[in-house]
Length: 428
Image 1 (cartoon, rainbow, N blue to C red):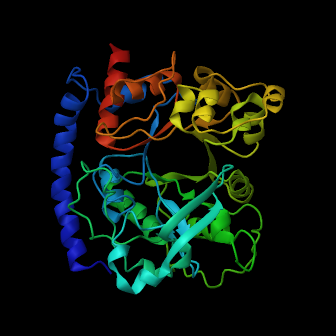
Image 2 (tube, helix red, strand yellow):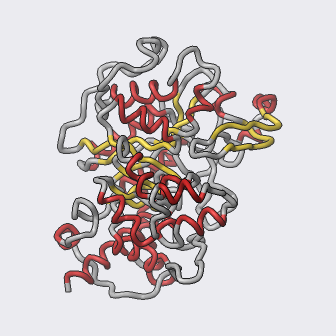
């Protein structure tokens, strides 16, 4: 049940969005980016352009955590705004509560994006420290936080989402309005916006830290299987082989009477995970495309590494600077060492400007992340001789040139403007 306050906030959000879109189509692209022609092509010109993607079609825009440039990330409003701004995919990050409910939040903790510090009833859940395997070769340690895996769904629902205070330019008007969503609520939102707008939107859930959420469960793959069963219940996945946990999810309460969306408004689906073991499992048990996320494992950025990943992944998603500064520079900057002999045996590190071509050659698509709002740093190393964009327009055009298939973006209207300008320039 949506509260009166939430309803009023959504109405205000709709009015505010008109203002945001106006600003995005005028001020943003003229003050934060170098001025270009104001004549933008229509969709037919964008669609007709031959792109350098694997399919030859235009790159797909993924709303990173919805539209976090303007709304608290992963909130109901963030997802609606991403849809209204015509993202192709709307991204949720999945976590799991102590009592086994899938919820949507980027981090495994909630102290930096909610009001949890102001709720006395939850103060006892704050942990001094927790460590876990993050999925791509790195152990994560976080101190003095409230972790989702220690909280029940009822406790999670006491929280209200906020913008990250590290980014003061992001509007905070909707702080303390929206709850953390369940995966079911996210899927219901995507269904609703697809029907309301008559447009298919892709779902692309990322399974965060599966080993953390599977710890202490009575059977293996508890986290993955509950995600699979939920996505399948809503018609975005078919289960292609028996799940590891069998039929041990009788407590998984899913709404009855869910009718599949019609083919004209049902978008595609894809899984994401940094844990490549989980990615392989998802690929083996569903017919859903799998995105292999990675930024910390050197072997993957070699020819034989891509061969290995191509056995189960459909899309490879590294941090964007792997396509600019390259693997060796990236790993040195992160103090990650590698076995030089092993890397040599696997074909050596692929050069940054050849990485897209090598991924495409194995039948996989490319999805670099993350392309931030123009107010924010783009976070490139800018090593000598490497691509180093001076603004967001230059950044996105580089990735259009090399053939990126998907782009995880924030400030979606700005990305659409740059994409349209790029298509128009090619049609002159």
